[in-house]
Length: 116
Image (tube, rainbow, N blue to C red; front, side, top):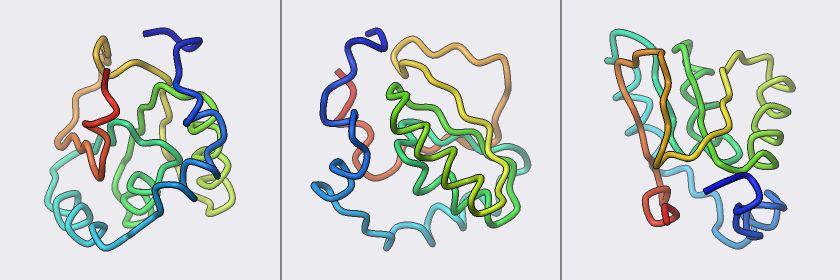
């Protein structure tokens, strides 16, 4: 899958969030896991950074990966506005090859169902 194959659903992040909602009830679960991780946390299918930003705000080194450059741009904008440091990478989870090692990898919410 290439950048040009990104589903139109992800081209306007605000529309994606309005359609699928942003229920944060799962954040305490992910924050508890991240708090126990002895190293960096990788948020796969990070989208607009909902989970990655919360983990970074908790003081954990965080990376976020997503196929959609527009979703990542919104995530980066939100991180900057909040004064958070997150390493963002654009890439296809099906062929992802990161040299960095992670103590914890998350694929939260509905990320798995978007792989195709």
